[in-house]
Length: 435
Image 1 (cartoon, rainbow, N blue to C red):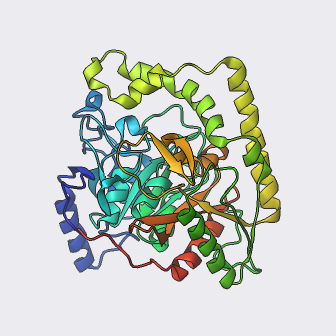
Image 2 (cartoon, rainbow, N blue to C red):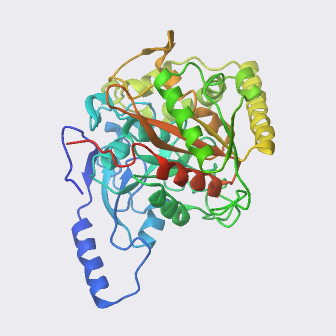
Image 3 (cartoon, rainbow, N blue to C red):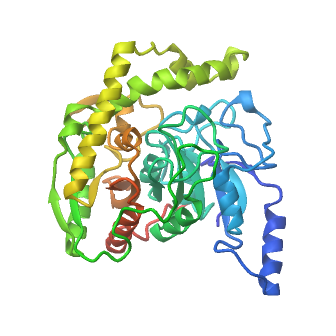
């Protein structure tokens, strides 16, 4: 592991008792005591996830100095496996942006190029893992937030089926129907190990009801060739040619493993642009939380993200209802697709990591708002489907390009199986940034 690097600014708090915990883990190892599956492994935690006795400040001066008394369930389960909380990682204000920056702990930079973003909202986590400061960590995902940062920095991240990993102890408590906790690491094997420890009901999160044993995929050793579709456009907005070529290369790699692979279209994605659906729904759901959080605080304590949300007009009631109906059509569209295919391969992001603070992109000749960075990731939050982001290519200027592996609801075994096959065939498996 590398020490925290101020030029990247991924680590915001180092756990004071981490060294003592490591010494105790070493003594247990020498004594022959029974060891957990992650015995002594240090892990990092996004700073919206509660860690007992360790600062959890949510990227905001409003929560400066906040120290929770209990761990989030995801942290508790990692600790139960004998892993050690090493540090907390940076995030946007309130964990709510596609770039990692805030008034309290500042901006995180991409270890591949400090002038580029590491993404958001789990951008500190992705940068720390990519730079070798941490082997594995916990992030959260609302529309892009573990998968996008993973693609920006060339690591692996899993957004499981909604509810698979309890959100207990993660801010915000409500609303959370689109929020997820997900593991982030440098290998698919590490992601699979963490997922096996994190998933399952906790009796407190009403969305977390499915036991880990309930998996609708074909498992790590399918008894027939998997049927995989790949899709770049339409449905996600414009996609850069280098990104499109990387998805095609990944599709070819899966075909070479014996999978049945073909180009597909999903009409529901073309009828209802998932990002528009998400925005119409989530603005109305999140504004009360932001308003309540900031109500008694000075303007200089609130960053542009919360201000922008509070200034966004309410969604008219009729449009909200229409967006709910569009969400149902999107869920039905994917359900119909997964009657015919086991998995779907798509881009994660439409472009490689971009410069900080960009407000619009020109992608394949089309100018779009910067929010379009979420075009291929947000459909899985709207529908709750599982998706994994992993690197499979490199841009002309040396930045990682990721692909997204998607399967049906509760079919994480299929996602992890195909991701492992892609990882074995990856042309960029051993590339890491040079600090």
